[in-house]
Length: 209
Length: 214
Image (cartoon, rainbow over all chains, first blue to last red; front, side):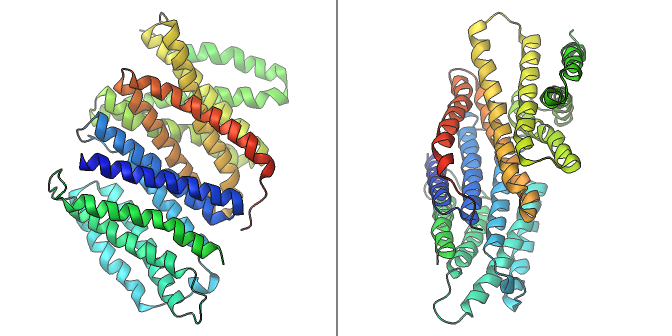
């Protein structure tokens, strides 16, 4: 039951994000909203497949889950969104904190690959590495900017929190601690859902001056 | 045993002959439709091969292998067309829709060959459902590619993203159908409802839309 509630809440949040980003895109015609719409759409469809599979089939897939492709596409749109919000001077900015990304993501990816689907975890790991690296760079860059012009710092902060929570979620999924509410997996997934939805607010802050 | 290659030849030959006689204007849609049929035939072979390779059941082949193979195979001729011929944006949408229509037609033929033609009511719903699903996926790819291929940095990631959306939607459709019972009728109705909603929303919104700010 907690799994169904968890998946349903994530699906609902993604659909809501999809609708709102679509409305914002139609109103303002800003490209980041279109990419955000695609990101939420991918995640919502992948979530729907996952939910239907969990309800109708119950046993694990012998090959792979189609929803994995949806999540990879979603991460890809998230990377594109990050790229579309990055300024030229931000791209050339260098800081030591950026090394935190490979230091944390690489060992975790090797661990995920050893216990799960190697190809999926490798692809996701590479995207997470790139995403975290750029988020750390963006966060430090905007933190150093003088005055109140720090509109994109929230986006990068949300991105960093998302990567941390997503990794906590994957770590808590193995070994599986049962289907009850005592399993921290569900609570972390609720936090992931909240972070995913908060991308909408942070992108709105970054896009609108 | 019916050889599906022979069925394909019987359908393709008169259409191909007609397309040469109809002139350049009608050649493209007929040719793309035939391409869609050919791609459907190839997909069936690849699906069977991969299902045998993984030694999986028909259910898992339909819900996990078929959506990936079919959507990738449908996209390949379009990508070839885009990269080699570099068509105008207005030619992209009819091309993918023709491929999708050809694919859905041949898939229905394969279904008839395997399952017979007795249940008219079910075949009518199934025909519209499958057709609408492939057309919907084609429309997503077609409209999406027009948007993403205008921007160099969005091309690769955007194309993969759109492909991902289509694969997952196709996966949901196949999952509901493979489950059977009343649930499969939801799957048949879903793409038709989305197409109707999409057309009506598009008609309402398109006159009010302007170009992107950045």
